[in-house]
Length: 285
Image (cartoon, rainbow, N blue to C red; front, side, top):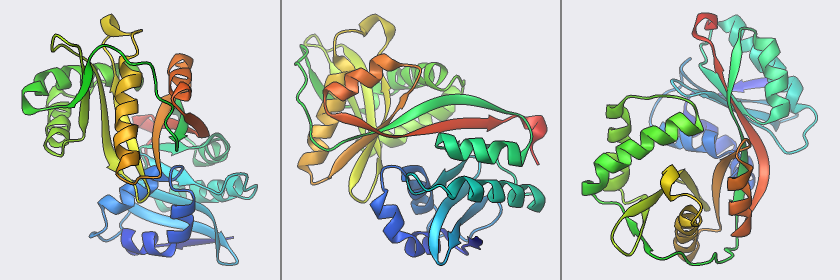
């Protein structure tokens, strides 16, 4: 088993093109992070590599601080956990800082004890994929793109989403800046009642070679149970598939089985799991 490190994220993308395209939805975090840093050189805080055997990849990894280390492997690859263990030892011995880990369950179970320190799980998620949309029942109202005038509301909802979904409280400025960029790129969608009241949010801000990632799905508690989120997500899927995307994908909290069922009703299926662990600050390298 050999560890291969890349000089640039672009080298990582080119050398693993076949793997990344074949398992595109499952590797979307690593893929998106590498694409975002294509023009940069790798360094400890921007590290991409793989473990391979006879030239074939067993485990892909990307460390893009301040985000989590992300691991990906071929589904069912029984040698991948051993590679995750070796990676953990290598990072620890090399003094390479990580803030946390995103990976499927078997890789987390191999990596975390080998790396040491104290990790806490933020969320356990399912990666879901839709290739054919099953039309949901229509709720009264329509979906529209968010505009700058919606920014205060989007910031409030974004903060609520972060507290509820990942149990974090980012600054208002951070969330406002994110949504300002999303609105400018026209990637934020709102479900609006006939009287003009916005009642649900979703975004499509992760473009993949053949798919579209959906995130920030949020409905305020007082508007839940009416199918607004389902209709908003369905509209994004309808639009992206019509544009030629082969699939849409999103992450669903395992602790929220209601959302899982809602998405399955419109055609989403679980691809694999993905757990999000954070390393306690006092245990950092």
